[in-house]
Image (cartoon, rainbow, N blue to C red; front, side, top):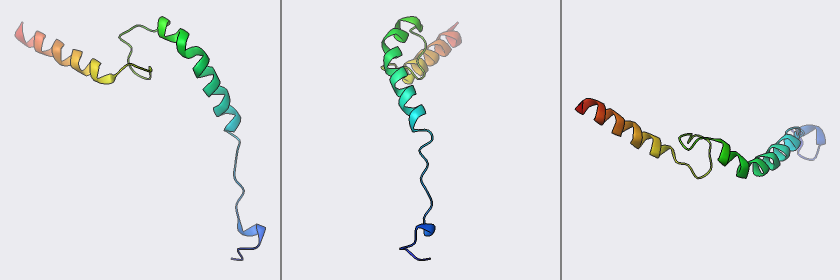
Length: 68
């Protein structure tokens, strides 16, 4: 193909740029308030909360159940 011809290239798509911008702004604005509404045991997709904490609690509960 001819590298100097415009028809040799595909256009880029920016259709989702506005959606990504909107959801990013919304996530930042709701971030502070949502932490007070979501229970502390909810770890998935929450900033500052780690999934390994849940895994640790699960193994502790399994060990306790096996002892009883």
